[in-house]
Image (cartoon, rainbow, N blue to C red; front, side, top):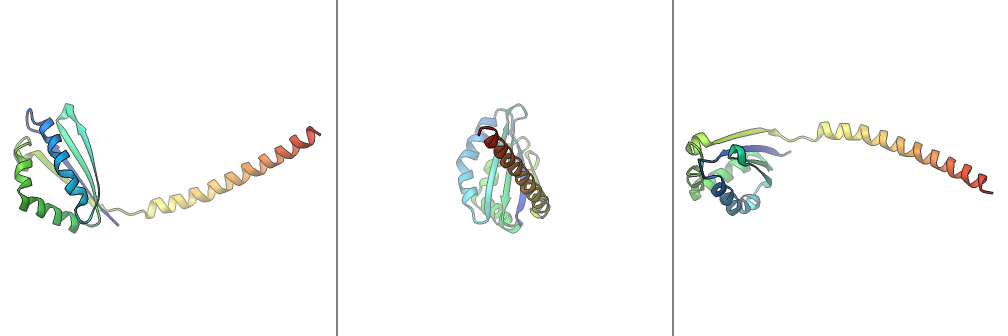
Amino acid sequence: MTALVVKNFKAAEGKFEALGDYFKLVLGDTRSFDGCIKVDVYADESAATFTLVEEWETFSAHDNYVSWRTDQGDVDETGALLDGGIDNGLTVFEWGTKTDHFYNQRKSSLDSRLVKLIDSLLEKDCANESFNASANE
């Protein structure tokens, strides 16, 4: 099970490009941080917003990452690029752990129906080939 964290960064006036450059500089470290599975970045220039969709092994791994970034001084540096600083320019959402239970249940149902459909089509195709073969004789 994995933890999903979504962060919205609202760039300060005239800082959108600088914030994007900053992410290019630091996200390699994020992606290689222990417990990080992936980070996807979405940019909306018209809203001067970057959204990071992060998947972590656990929320604890994400907490360790945030502590590390804070200790590095990166949180203060990011805050300088945000509208209203870190307290007002960053919104963080944490969703529960990812589960594939519903997907796997639905996938299993779809898989069995797909197998039946393919079998049915193959039977019809074979019947048509037999018909076509006898018609060509």
